[in-house]
Each structure stands twice: as structure tokens, then as C-alpha cells.
Length: 252
Image 1 (tube, rainbow, N blue to C red):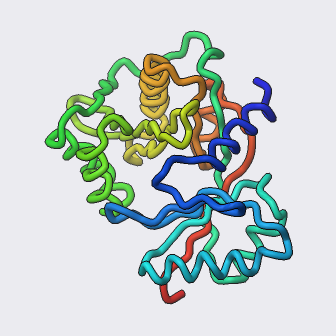
Image 2: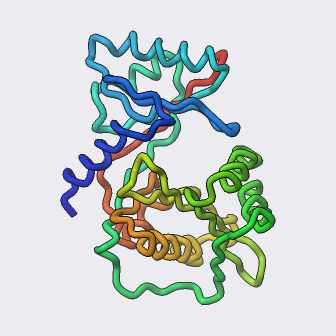
């Protein structure tokens, strides 16, 4: 994989998203909808304009009465972007490895737990199993917004549940966003603690790889925590950068 070339394609897509984003010379942002927080999706402020730019985003989302996330990659400019956001009260969450898989360059035969049954959800009723696992691991956060997204735009999201003996034990999703037409997003991989280390996460990744290929995508990408990064690298994902979500909370 030509790492810099692929990263450049991804960044170019970040700079030129679809109509639902506000796009300016120095930033790309989106107001929150369906209960989700807003987001600054991309930024490239000159150093002398950074302070003004940060204040502008805070004022914009405060007027909307929305929390928002500013997603920062280690290669974003200026170099002190993350540190500057923290000084203004943003909360830095755990850094994530930005990994990309060339879907033409897949690993060889992999052992999969044959006790695992993977189901791609087709109906809102089936979403209950997904929500059951999500609530057990993460609580109720974003469940209403995910259900609304699945209802309104099912072509943009695929939801998967892994079962052991007909019990839902792990979940994941695959996103097809207009702003990244070359890249399918691998998100939300979560397994109940007592079922980890049994190859269930791997089985869910492989199921999503197959769908991404079937839909004609060139790359898969994921923001990986340290727990999943080694597994994904074994499956052929390559680290291109590091990302960090920085969160602004109202009244912070």
C-alpha cells in the first residue's frame, strides 16, 4: 500500500464532503442531528488564525446548544492543534490508530470460531439484539440516534450481531458515507467481556470486509483502540496515522 497516497485521498475527501456539511477555506463541520453531537470533521487553520477559529466553532455549537467533537489527526495542521484545543477546555479522549485495509490485499486463510453465527440485521425489530449488547457495554448512549439512522438511511449503514448458541454477544457496524466514497468505515466493534478472546471480533471484521468488497469499495478504515489494533493488523490493516477525538461540552 502506498501509505501517503491513500492518506492523501482520505484527506481530500475530508476537505470536500457532501452538502450536509459546512465547508470553508479552513474547516469542515456538521451540526448534530438525530440526537448526535456536532463535529468539526476537518480543519487546516494557519497558526495565526487558530485561536479565532477555535472560538468561532465554540460559539457556533454553543448557539445550537450542542456538544461537539473536533477530530484531530496527528498529521493535521497546525501541529499544536490538539494542545490548543485542550487549552480551550476540550476533553481529549483516548487516541486511536487510524488503520486502512486495501480490499484487494487480503490475508490468507484465517481460523474462525465455528460456534459463532454472524447476522446482518435487516429490520428494526432485529435491532433489539444489537441494542442489548450495546447497552451492556456502553450504556444507552446514542441508541436512539442509531435506530433513527438505520430507519432513515439503511443504505448507509449495516449492523451486525454475533451470536453464540443463539445469544447476542458482540456487535459491529459498517458505514458507507458520501464524504468518503472510496472508503467503508468499520466501527463499533464491541464484545461482551466474558466472550472476548474467542475470535468473535475477527469474525465480525471478516463479514464486513466481504460486504465492503461486494459493494465495490476500495478501502476499509477504522479508528482502532489499543485492544483491537493488533487484531486488525493481523487481518491486513495498516496504520497510516493517529486520530484523537476532542470533545467540547456545553457549560464546560
